[in-house]
Image (cartoon, rainbow over all chains, first blue to last red; front, side, top):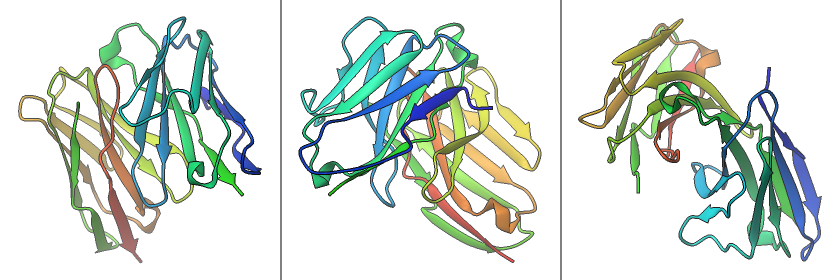
Length: 118
Length: 109
C-alpha cells in the first residue's frame, strides 16, 4: 500500500489563487522530503529539499516566495503555490525518505497533484 | 549537481524481446539507485532499489546492475510484454534524488 499520501490529486482554480498541496508519510518518519514538478513529456525536476524543522533548500531558478514549503512535522510537508498563474500549471510530486541507514532506504513518492490554473 | 542521462530516449520493440535501458550519472557519491516506471499522467512506481554496495538487483523479469565507480546502471527487461510500455526513470540517490529524462518504452503486441 501507499506509504506517502499526497493530496489533492487534482486542482483546477483561477489565476491569482494560492494552492496548498499536502504530502504525508504514513508509516515512517520522514526527516527529508522533496518536491518535484513535471511538465508534459518532460522528466521530474527537483524544486526543493526540506528537512523537518528547518528551512527548505531551493534549486536554482525556483522562487522560494512563490513556492512556500513547510515541513513542520516528521510526517507532513506542504507546498503552497502562491498567486498561481497559468504557467504554474504542472504535475507536482512529493517524495519522502527516512533518515536511518540511507543506503537501503528508498525514496517513496506520492501519486502527484495535477495543478491547472485557468 | 548530479546529472543523469538515459539512453535511448525512446524504444519500440515487438513483444517478447529482451531489452536494455541505460543510465549514466556524474556524481558517484550515492547511497543507492532506484529505477521507476511512470505511466502517462500517473505518479512513479518503484521497480528496483540497488544499494551502493551492490552490483545488481533482480525482481521478476527485471534485472538492474550498478557500476558506481563508472557512474552507470542498466535495467534489463526480459521477455517484454505490452504491459511494460511506460517511461522508465533512473534516479541515483544521494543527498537528494535527481532524475534522467527517461526512456519511453513501447512494446507492440
